[in-house]
Length: 438
Image (cartoon, rainbow, N blue to C red):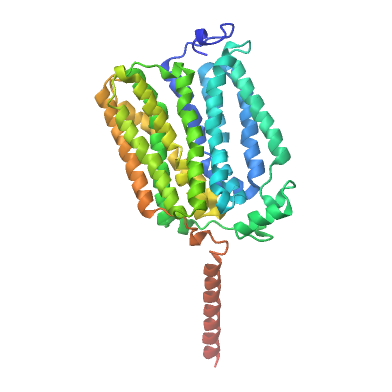
């Protein structure tokens, strides 16, 4: 869009400044962060099928309209459109998490979780690999939006045909499979119709919940550094423009996609052979996926422009190791609270995505000269410390044990106690009245 030499020259080229490009790229997150918390309420009220369908369908429509928005209003209209996309897509991950909680028996949770969340890495690999080909074709750069919209539209049709909120609602699930899913999660007939109130006070006073919130916030901080700032470091210090190279841009996502299944195989074997408890497994994998990239980030900071191959290798290793955070800590949300997993994911993901908005500001304060390696070393060292402390908190206080406040009847004893107290007060009041009458 901003360089006709990299695409079909028959389509418009826009002379946007670096600041305007930054606004366009970051505008998505302005909307994305706002709908995280509402997503938890919506998926509890309406179920995953409709809530997941709406943002994907809206994304398809907005993607198809992107070239028209740009030709009409330039980069400002493009930014507004991306904010709208963010608003809709903020619903997706809490919804996916709630859906996994409804469908994934504990023994199959690692596998189903990796299949679901590795899809984003797979999509990134194909998008980066095919976008250049589409831009060079007769479709030009607008074709990237049209192809994306078409794929979203196809998914929406398949989802409406085959998706279901839970096993009992699905016409494609046999009785044996339904019984297995429901029995493995200790659910019975009528469970999915229950309206379980959210135990807010218990959640916000839960130490394991805060450990999970901290470790996922550390991931949000580190992600913004690894995905947004590392390319800037390589361009400024190592004099590499990896954004212009589709292979270099796709390598981290390819590594994450492949390593997700390496972690999955290890987790399946470890659980089937009972090498360790689920809590130990998740903490072990999360330690590798946090402390490994922390060391790689520090290593990248000591490289110069004569070691570009090593820098690319470390960047790829960094991303590949971090792929274990899905099994390591994201799925812990479902382990701790399958009944409230969508709401917890909304809170955790919402807080975690504040940092991609803040870390560029911090980097802007620290890095005043993009070619200064010593300034970038401070950025990477801070990120490594955040990675280390976040995982350390998770090791000490995190757990996969289902929390007492997740029980469907958790609030009922309190209600019963309150009712009993009210009845006692009423009886006492009647006795006092009788004594006065006598």
